[in-house]
Image (tube, rainbow, N blue to C red; front, top):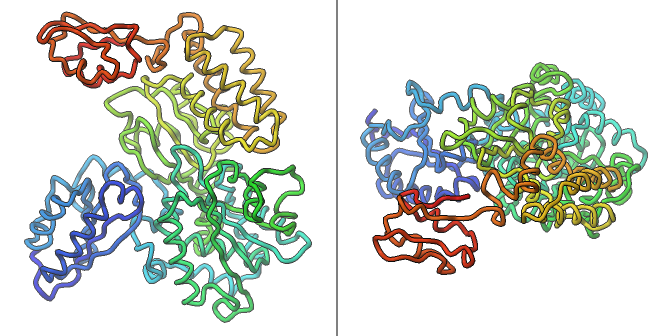
Length: 597
């Protein structure tokens, strides 16, 4: 279609969440803005959030007459110039760069086919800084329905009927938590959004806050109405500056439209929302530590009971839900709890958002119905393992979770089934590993994280995790003994049983699951002083294969310790005494002459 000068129905959207900006989306957006203005094109340029296809950023969508959509992937400034000239000016779409579109078949057209987008319903579609866009998508209709035609008890019953469980990891029924807080004696009451997302490899909350902040605000306000809270807080880590910025914009817009304040929509219900930026302590994701931080104290957990629903912020009834949980609420109110409960299996209803990371072809954000298998997520949606590799394991639940082996890849994703493997659902991190991954090293990595993040209040968490880490370091250094495995498992059980909060209670999970499913790797490290995945530096060596070496000197030039020597155009050799096993020679060799043993 050739665009005439009076045709203003073409819309161009650029994904400006953190994933897109990191890939260069801001430069693409700024270039298009300037060129559209300079050339006086009948095109409306809009920002949007994360569509979930992070592996194809920068994403650029062209919406033409009749809402015909063409989605371009991996866009650079130079590619944007060609799209501007050929597609927007001359009406000739560039098919080689289109990753999804009406009438166009691509390998990615099944990326969304097995997804069930409830939380992510607006992400990558609306402008996250436009309340008009949110309202056009049905935003704040749930809040209005609740305030005008539902009692707090009816709201709670609707949420209970949905079967929604907390998406922060514990999986406690959301409606029951609200009911406890509402019935708890004491005033005032508070609602808190836990946006303290600290798991390595997890970015679900960040993406939702950056892409659809109003849905979280609306869910938080409905929660406030349900339990009788007049004040709400959003506890978000300061490392999420774009999320914080868009939350502040959304709060200001909601106040201006009458969705926040003393008399919301002219009713007797009023509620304010404040943002508190956390300093990045992983333990503050635990609700009692989060409350301590909100109160201005050091973020350290306390004994429960009493639970926050009865005695939380400043000793008053407090309901804490995470970002994903709250983003479900408006959809449930509009469509009904029964509709939500129709998705899922067993005691796990609705959908779940996951951040796919690691050795997977399509890393990004997906939302799938509960009950789908791990294999379906990894291969049908995630596109399988990079470079044609083999799936080895999936880490679920972050540092608090565990490693699920390929043999259990047909496990359905629901709370009970995942817990049965030794992992946990967690908040939604899913790190995929291939055969090149050393499982002992993985256990050491996650335990190192939780050991550093321990608040130190519990002896078993503070010292127990340190002793476990020392044993793992000894094993990966080739100095381990078989009795170390017994000590590790014994320590792990004691740490789980004696720690005060969820961080300590779950910290041993990566160690226990890797010993359970990959004990042969531990034994190889200990008995054979060998790392099967060839990752542990102390247990590997680099050698040059004389028959393959061309003497190009690429390895010698990059070696930081001058361990590689030899004459030009003649086979080289590596001095094992000088070699620090950095692997730079392996990376630089173009003829596969470096052997890792």
